[in-house]
Amino acid sequence: MAELYFDDLTPGTVVDLGTTVVDRDEMVAFSARFDPQPFHLHEAEGERVFGGLAASGWFTASLWMRAYVDAVLSRAASLGSPGGDEIAWPAPVFAGDELHAEMEVLEARVSRSRPSMGLITLRGTLTRTGDGAVVYRSRFTGMFEVRPTAP
Amino acid sequence: MAELYFDDLTPGTVVDLGTTVVDRDEMVAFSARFDPQPFHLHEAEGERVFGGLAASGWFTASLWMRAYVDAVLSRAASLGSPGGDEIAWPAPVFAGDELHAEMEVLEARVSRSRPSMGLITLRGTLTRTGDGAVVYRSRFTGMFEVRPTAP
Image (cartoon, rainbow over all chains, first blue to last red):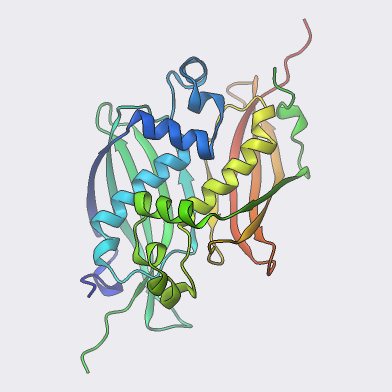
């Protein structure tokens, strides 16, 4: 039984999603499979372009997603996401980085065509704890069930 | 030595990135690690919400990225991406789907602050060959080296 419904995700809600440390082997394995650009695979090329071997942005996005699922969606009546209108990688991510994940509810509205569903607009961020750099920022829509009324 | 520079990626350029088939085991392993929502892991829950066990949107995005690297970036003087302003999953992706990937150059401009670099705005899409449904659409910026002039 879900604890969190659309009704609970009110604008202004900020949720600390905890921290995650970037594992080098996993970061490179992800690059090898999904984003085999030289600066995501080889130290020297990463150094030349980004000042170090850098994670694929899709790996970074996926790390944020996992933190969001663990802290929020695993307890929520989620119905997926149609997408978003911002995805940004303002600074490179390196192996060993500790990243702090956060989510904030920006907007919320009940679906007109389907009143049992609500849509929230949320911001996701990952901040490197070492230097405070924001390394990932997203803005997208999450769909959630409206809390059922007692019979 | 790169073959493709900023100069080659002119607006209107459309590149066929080929097809990829969604492997069920890989799809579920990705969900288990990065997006362990029940409808991405369990058949019955996927059926209830999406009409079938559905891929994580980040897996779908990553499949597009791999096709883009193979067909374009592996031959290009790429300098990464700062992000984008659209990411959409208009329809769910299921195991066994054959997806056709494409990219289109929408805009191109040389960086004002760094004239050796150009920025292109591109659209990425994945279309399911079975029913023609667009299952992924993105719009983001790619950074590329401007072609060096002969000495």
